Length: 285
Ligand SMILES: [Zn+2]
Image (cartoon, rainbow, N blue to C red; front, side):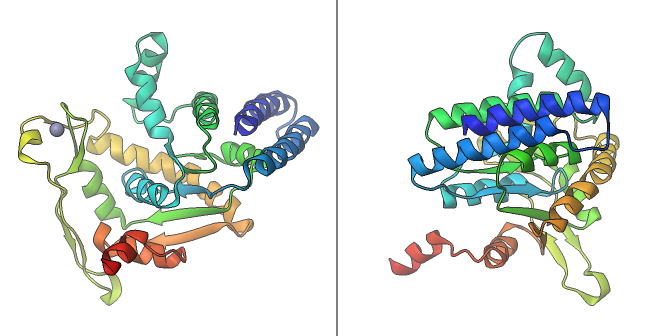
């Protein structure tokens, strides 16, 4: 996947150059970089003897993408690459770069395409060194430009768009807590809302921490109501064209979360035509 990360970088650079020249035409150097990447990728794939899934998860911040993506990645034996984690890791490393990032993130703004692409490229290179054969991306692509760059350099098999009702989403975001000691993620929101148009009631129980974490819970600075609402607004503005991009290519799978994880997980697997191997094992025992 070094080929992918190299191509992502060169396409991003080419697309920056071409955007300065013209904002409409598909530039020849982007097309060349994409074709070269495809050829390299084919050779690498032959050497590796096939690959696993290359999926993308879309969905509002707080919808639970990370939970579903990480479960699926364990099941399908591919890494779950969350750009949010890449950004948080970068924030935690010392230096002026992390200070600039903090300014952006704490105001609910999105990190630029260039920064995200660089972080992702670095991550894919590291993965390739470890022999990774696929990925589930979470939080990328976030803009139409990122989607174009990604589509030019690799075959994304499927894009899963997770959706959750707005009121549940807001409550979930505001209920997020992290343990300041072990880094565990929890949610104190207990969601119980009437069904829409006679539909089923939506119930999502809180995900409470174990006793040793209870007194160490913190709210992330970007989880205030004002910042969450701004984040959702920015997300919708940017993501609609990204959804449309994949819909037009027949790659978009829309999935409305019916509730919490126990309800949603089997239905998601069903929608993906997957069997839960954990379930088979426990049935066999
Ligand atoms: Zn803890």
